Image (cartoon, rainbow, N blue to C red):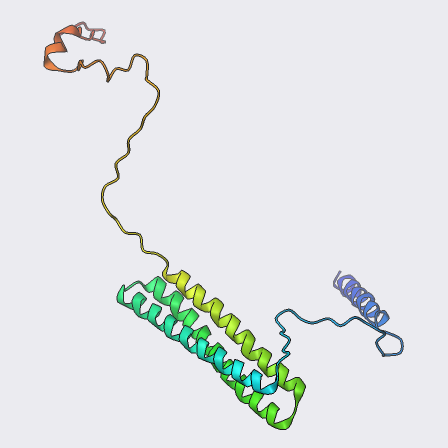
Amino acid sequence: MRHNKAAIAALILALAGGGLLYAQPAGGESEDLPEVTASGSTEAKLSPREMVTESERLIEEMGGMHVRVLTLQGSARKAKDVIKLNCVNEKLLAVKQLLNIADDAKVELTEAIAGGDSPSQVHQYGQVKLAHERTLAERDNAEGCIGEEIVFVGPTQIDVDGPPMPDDPTDDGEDPFSVTNARLFERAATATPFGSQ
């Protein structure tokens, strides 16, 4: 039985491997394929000086977002809400990492400009731009962690208007269980076979 399972597994691997080998192009060269870009890439049509200026502006905005998340962390800490604090701390960590990524990309952008490497310039500017967008999303998520506080302003009063109820027992003004109406009720029969006592 063990040999049969091993033979079946080997057959499946051989067929899968053969399919992979069959899928390779014969000459090893690719034909005219359309260009495909991954999502999250950004195209920069800026001069190197504009890239540096824009990168500095984006990193400055990211610093402001970092301060805002720190403020949210302080408010969660002041409220002594552990769940909110953990949520904000997670977002704060992501903002710090993205800020580091953007700073490193700006340094690499400056080096690429000095070296005249245009593809690297575009790539590094794209890194700063994407880090800024992700930081914006993380800041918004941190705002969502705190959320609006539910404040109790007082007891709720509900007034209901509806159709009149026919033969409403609460509407006749007479309480059937009052002491004056107690004589209207008959004494209940004794339910024992031995008679009343």
